[in-house]
Length: 317
Image (cartoon, rainbow, N blue to C red; front, top):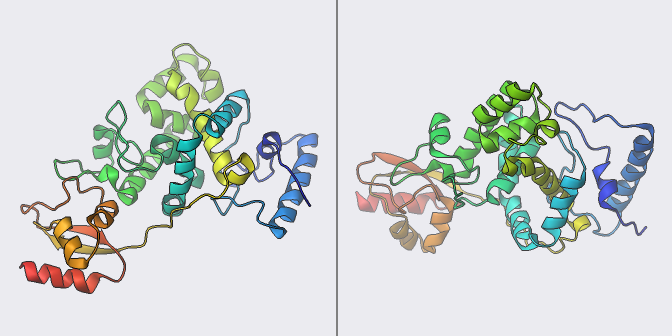
């Protein structure tokens, strides 16, 4: 069967679910369309490789809205922003499983991991004009409030595991404050204080209503449509014209506590590795070494190299 999906059809898939498993309300026509689309997806999954999502569980656990603003961002990612979005998709395979697991363990929607996609493109080195850093684009005060250390030699905002745990805590607190996933993401972007003032001023927790107000920040006005567009494409990239993606494999590594004074470049040479292999696993180490003043620090090393790292450490003592 040769079936061509349209963006409109995708936006009405029944797999749209709100957080907690509650389905988004559908009218009679949409229910009929839902049944048709489900049948088409099942048929395509049995045929040639016509549907290959990056996310291997293509459903949505935050509410989905499809409107002209979302459509604009979909078109942008397919055209002007196509090169960047392709890189985001290819990187996502390395980070999404770990990020989604952390979110799920804290009872949060796994689709919030796509916040990291639009914030940083899954890059530890992303820095915004507001000095927000890392995968989840934390500014220093918020990072420190949620347990991320930022010093001259260490920036845990660049560590995908630590920063994801901090982001999950922050997003959970924001949802408890606002009770809406759209406002949660909005507050993540513009700050909870400013979001609360807008909620109080207009007596509304409806993102779409608030986003039409003149004093609503333009960046955040685009934020939710951008997030939804990224989610729709990322869950079915071939549908939107992203073919033959070179997906990065999930990182595999072991942890090892190294003493102060350990230099990643020297360690890499001893292990017969390119220094970039260790620095990419440990982007939080800003200078590429652990200061001698630090007693020990846990780093990531490629799997299977624990014995050789132990030999290196013993040789340095």
